[in-house]
Length: 261
Image (cartoon, rainbow, N blue to C red):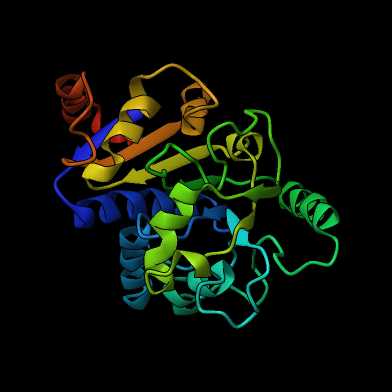
């Protein structure tokens, strides 16, 4: 796990976008895992600018989103398929239908989850997955206590997660759905490269557990310690609880220039 501590969201966006640009340069048909929420916005903004200036193309790429609320109408602005389209997909040149998400309106939820897993497998798996982390350590919508071997399925959101997400629903926790569909922890671990973004003091304890704590279902993101290629992009506030912060800075500053992330 590589921990990179940066000054602000702009630097985080640039590093994340560099990794995606490098991937697409060597594999234009790459499969990207796309997270929603506030954490990855700086990466998407940077990629949007690169596309507008002709530096990058997603014309052959594919994408899969991490999760989706259950029961939100198809045109609801907070439906994650609509969110990712607004902030990223519609601003670049993905082909029609190239980005898929779990179907939160499916009549048969278990079957829809199986189909989503199959779609990822049929695409050859995810090359690079963007991730955020919840204040309680949840990854995608894998809440504390989730199976470390889980696959795409329905989950009940904790009150903490619903409270954290109420800001997207006008501050009304009652408007936040109780259920979601989410890629499981084992599904996420199948991606070849994971880039996790965390900013702000509110994420500091979750980041500490992710990087330096024991692997535990109580902090689902700690499963990433077992992945061979994880990059954690942090601002100063999110890194404030790390015990080995000086080592992480030294490691990043002294790494070979050719190594990338």
